[in-house]
Length: 390
Image (cartoon, rainbow, N blue to C red):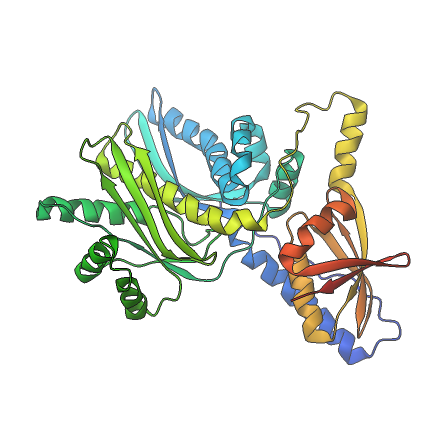
């Protein structure tokens, strides 16, 4: 199966009393913005999902892998978009829910034996359906990428230089397994040179000014160094994250138990935990709203109707702006708010637009998300007026 892409259609516009050239420019922008929104939703793709399945024969092993893959990918994208406090909901996700929200997949690589199938798969999710599922689960989420930051896996080394070099290479390879292309933080992975490892040794020993030397060397205003060392008992990793990301300065340490498996596999687990921490630093401050209790089954008719209203409530807004360019920026940001669906422009003027959209829980729940996207909502008579704020 290949990825299926859906283009967003242009909103309808009431052209009465509006100069033709202004409306034409706005209409063109709507179509361009719609296409950009579809292309820009890269956080809704999970790449490099490793599937490992065994069965009595190769055909059954492959069938089992493709059956289990969507749920595994759903849990990964859940961790990308949802806050840490919602992770207990992962156990409640089902294969049927995963099949419903997956929009397609592609095989990156595969190999098999008579009873074993291993593959790397990329899954693309429907933005609309996945957001509806998270809302149904009572989980707040955030899907906007940060600006660029640089991440460098570094290694302090050991007395045994050859062993240190081997572990350093394994640590680097572990980071290559992570899907940076679609991550919530726009992260560029840089491979450290020997001199960089030596500078990190000095930084770890207390020479903090050497960090500025590294930043200048790579012209990276946001540079994050990540190290993982086995302790003397070889039963725990000492993870260290140091530098500056889009949240601010970070100097974080954590001990992570060694699990069964090879050292290389353990390094992969540690790298995933470290990157999850960095993603959380960007995501968590942006998410407002609690993880709410949701009844698993909607046997009760009132509960079913309440859930339906939560997902399908219509919101009417009067959007104020200063001109064409400002309207283009506001419209793009408004469409990116998680949960916003079926946005339409009912009327348009040079300084404002009447907008209709769907949002779970209606205008009250929408208002709790607006500040993170630099919006303010005020009531003017019977109108809810949306304005952009700095």
